Length: 371
Ligand SMILES: Cc1cc2nc3c(=O)[nH]c(=O)nc-3n(C[C@H](O)[C@H](O)[C@H](O)COP(=O)(O)OP(=O)(O)OC[C@H]3O[C@@H](n4cnc5c(N)ncnc54)[C@H](O)[C@@H]3O)c2cc1C
Image (tube, rainbow, N blue to C red; front, side, top):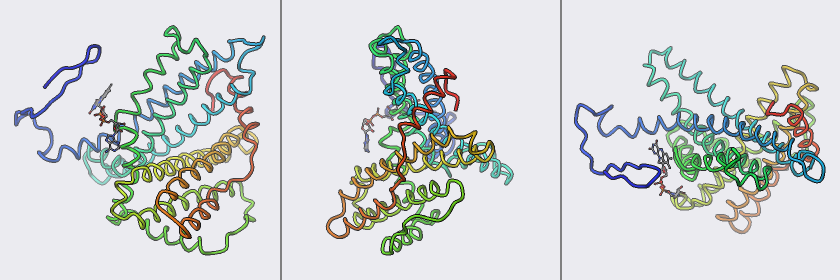
């Protein structure tokens, strides 16, 4: 055991002997409890990061409205509006994915309790079922907070660097979130690792949908759809994102086989595709619900937000997919998968600048996060 550091105290335990009466759970099975607690911890970390992001956002909005340069508030400038809108969009996306996962865990926990499982087993069992989503939330939530505090410092200009302003402390405090509860690198690796393990255990059907996508690749692409139902094109785009992930991960597993574990860059690319797709889908589902409740006109701001998110997600998924494909495929195979990726990440043209301005103006009018 040792103590290190000046302002922070760190305790190290090495070969420490634990009295028998102090043993918690079963010897040799402690890691199971620890891992399952980590799932809940990751979800909670996302919630905490989200709260911090909203606070940093509100501080930055207030500053942008009061700080004047060139005889006007800096909030009037398009460059600042872009930042404010992007922060709000990512906060909304994180919240959507978090609520969605928390509801899944709650529902399963209740079901397990109804099946006579003790509370701790029901809670940890429910969280284990959604361990992949918890890892995704941890990564995205911590990176959301880093993004918001970084842009917050930028909006504060030189004052953002000064300890007198709260945003400077938020910038420092945010940084730990990408490190604990499993670093974001480890959580990205886990996202795919857990998915592949579940597929091998038969808990998840990956092969069937992956074969379907391969078949679709050989067929003539469809050029649009006649489906006029609201959000049909957005739903189709989300479906295509999933196809892109199945196609790239399926091809990577086939090509790299057991070697895949040592190709961490490819695993990171695929995890990034999944993280984007999950948040895009969560945002779309939430906005569809809002539009159903309030009507399309009264939810136009949410629709702007969702379309901006999806439009950007398509390019991000394309870039991650391209990097992965180029790392493991060559020749005709490479060309075919790249063509498939292009097909599955093609979003309609969209004026995201105007959409962001509308979002920023709305937030600036209310003076705080209001979505
Ligand atoms: C303020 C604070 C509070 C903490 N609270 C707790 C707590 O309550 N409970 C607890 O258990 N721990 C806690 N920790 C510890 C924390 O979980 C670890 O710091 C964290 O897991 C990273 O481990 P490490 O510091 O040993 O870094 P390392 O494991 O040395 O990682 C260094 C870098 O290498 C990367 N890396 C490591 N292994 C791999 C790999 N296999 N593949 C790819 N990249 C890899 C990491 O992602 C990271 O970027 C806390 C840490 C801090 C700073």
